[in-house]
Amino acid sequence: MKQAGRGFLIGLAGVLAAGLPLVAQAAAAQSALSKQIDVCASCHGENEMGSRDGGYPAIAGLPAAYIRAQLKAFRHGARDNVMMNAVASGVDAAQRRALAAYLAAMSVPVSAPARGAAAHRPNPVGAALAIHGAPGQRIAGHGTAEIPACAACHGAAGLGQGAFPRLAGQPADYLQAQLRAWQAQKRPAGNPPVMPAIARAMSEAQIKAVSAYYGALPANPG
Image (cartoon, rainbow, N blue to C red):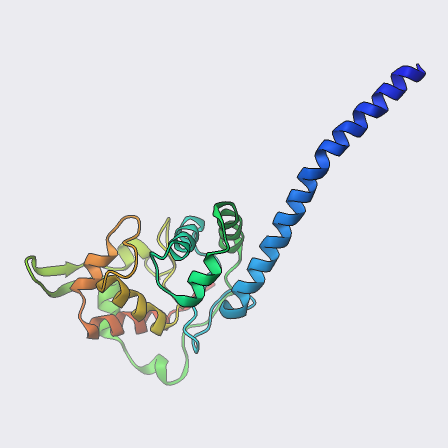
């Protein structure tokens, strides 16, 4: 019995010793994730809902696959942003999955529509583009392009659906910058790869109008 008991203890010690590296790895991964979240919060805010003044987008509650794709694009230079290129360079594939899952699971605070003067200025051009689409400007070699309704992919209230991210409540300046980046082929086309063609069909006035429209919508109407 003594020998059997000793053998059991030796075997148990071996199992525990083998498990220690896994525990250490899990702790290290959790620590790295916490640091990455803090880095995100330094620009995107404690609740990761962005900043209208600074033009930082809200990243809480966006689709995990979308977040992973953007981090990968920043890491490999397919998206050009000095700060994000530097941040993403230290985030590997496993860390991207963990960080994207965390951000996607974050709740989006209930918010009210824009108030004050902005609430009383109708934006018929932006609303029409978002809800119905519109004829686009001429593109060399392609004639006049049609701009599809944003709502067809991003949802009726711009809240996102499936792999398509939320537009509602994002800073208008940020949305404008992304559309211009697609026009200039300085941002990956996405999946499905429709945004460059849509952006090229849009005039500067349409870009500003639809960006202002979505910027004034609540990110979570409740």
